[in-house]
Image (cartoon, rainbow, N blue to C red; front, side, top):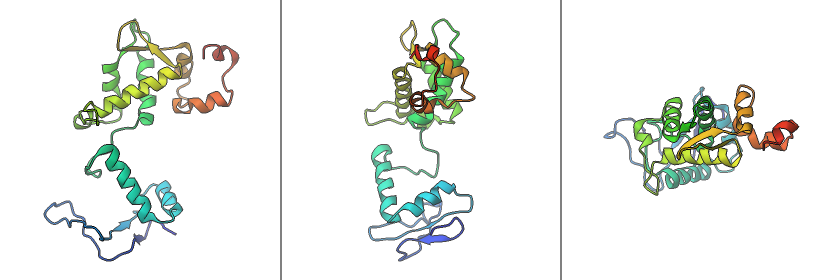
Length: 201
């Protein structure tokens, strides 16, 4: 079993010295092995995940391959990844709800800025291009907007690029301290909503 205190060595052939100095950093080559240390402060879910793996080496290689395919080659230790669509969803919804009383609703640019501020997205991350050469961050915000529209929680405002809450969205916004909008599908399946709210869905 893996624990958070001891070092786990995977097929240890040699100990690689990973330093922040590029000149002293050892280059990893095919056939090399690396050791992984799980510090005491590590998230317990990571330990649980590691203990579930039949081959932690193969599992980590698959995760690396997925990361490179989706986000390219970069140093993940230097800054957190761009928030996912799921992570953005409650902040997009919160921004639209907070501006719902304005005549036109809220403009998508304000939503970009709001999510960027709330999630500490750097200017470099905001401009990081997707495969289609558009902003990866803004693409994810727009997909979060689309998801909220598909759930009938928001609608387009009278002007292009503006969004407002629907009646259903207003209900969930008023309950935001009690309900996580990311649990919307489970709430609907659980028949949580009363009849008056169901009629708006």
